[in-house]
Length: 410
Length: 107
Image (cartoon, rainbow over all chains, first blue to last red; front, top):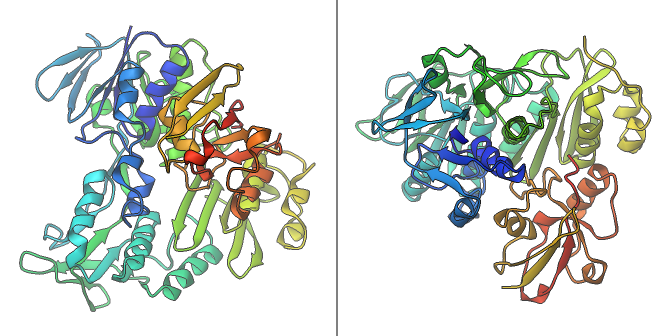
């Protein structure tokens, strides 16, 4: 037996690791387009960027691990096509690899700016190791940074660069940071946090041009202002990398379509992680989730499937972000909420609980780890909670959840 | 370079040589102890690296801070006196011979 895994980030590596842990004794080939060992992505915008995490601590596993587990890791290797009839993948060098089962863990690719000047020197994205290393190498000569985008990557980059003493302006093309991801209370807290740390947050503003001869010197926005910059970091989202899947006729919508066992419409091809569109068993809707948790848990599901111990995916989404001294922890997906309850335990500790009517569907917490953990534990049952009690910071959050009625979304 | 013994869920033991300054979590992951998933990579965000420090060693490792305690109390159903998040324990030669139990994954 031969299992070929295309993509060696969190999902691909975890799939290889879990296949071995579950007793898969066939050949495993893990293919990465990148030159470096598979690495953790979250620190790229945090500790790694700030130079507080040495490179060898970025690796998901030490190099010797792959040999010990008999995982054939192929770095710097691009897959250019899949032939489903012959069950082979074609590599850029013309070589073909035969598979019995194929796992696509191709992830997502960064969305690029399409405005004038986007190709100037000094314009960066922050998705992979090369991006982060490029920023780090350029930083000693940089004083002023304009970050384009008010999502997690943009905000984390802003916090890290500010911590490193740069003058940072964040241009956000919406009313508030994290607009599509969180409620106004959390956004306001994040805005204030960045402002207190000396970052300029400019909302309702779109970058329209980047200027400079060869090197960026400023960003022109649709408010007519010029923001001086020696560096631009754009965090404007990603799109699922599904061209290999669509190229061989697999079903693709917003990502590669899979069933609860991570199987595509070809029974020998599976897909996991950021590139996947799947029906979530709790939310009952098709979702594509960009997170480490989703990558790791879908990898576990596919490994169980391939080791003849199938169990459908039922993990619950959660996320985290670190900005300055704020620890954001998020459980569940708040999209579609009808009510939000805010629980403020101190000036620096805030949580927003999201409901569809009486059912809790998600929580965002800032420096309120207990609320995050308790909610994360109970959320898969969509508990019905007393909202007045929840808002009362004097009542322990665990007391409110214990014994709460359970529900399901229909 | 302390030697650390992990007692796995099936009661088998695994002794490994750790790198001074590494976390207990990192040591477990690097040595293929798959029950320690450590989703967040060691930033004390997720509680997927729970382990139980042997009673004899509880007082010798640095005690948990507020954040770790909050995670442990809320996340782990069967929280024991030696329960710790292994990402928060830094290894040094003082911990030569440390014994920790690895429970089945709590998640």
